[in-house]
Image (cartoon, rainbow, N blue to C red; front, side, top):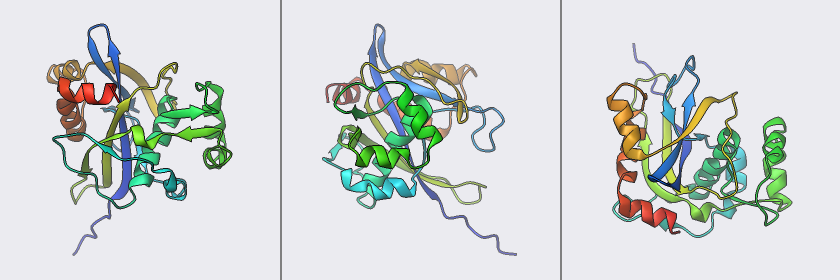
Length: 218
């Protein structure tokens, strides 16, 4: 009996970096321990590319790539970048962009979470202005065949927006923390932090001070 191969769903995830007293930190969020996929794992804000991201993909803007990594695939590039920004805002309350040219205020996320059309409407009204050109492409990972869920995920990294505080949406993730990439890898080795293999690979990349400087001086 032939088992049908699931087609991977397009997805995007976003690493946010910030400078700290003991080095550079990345924002990580913890998935629900009872989730059907990656239960309890520490990941980055992210999710599936939605129709709204395709509709707004003409906002793709200037492309900037990190050195020493593969080039970003051209197809639907703007939609992936906008999905990464949207999911980061929904899950962690941080917007890579501006609100009427001023810093974001917390209650705007409530509008997006409670109104399915709010994100697109606010962008069209130019109240939200995502800045996809600030995202650096890292790599692409496709879930191997045979698993119950498959994703075709692009990993991005950007400097964390200033004057905004991370706050998780508990309907999707249960916790968040800023952690040094090297420390996160050490915590995994000690059995204190569950990581997926693509997450581990991205942390290993971002442990490089040269790449950190490229992102933080953008």
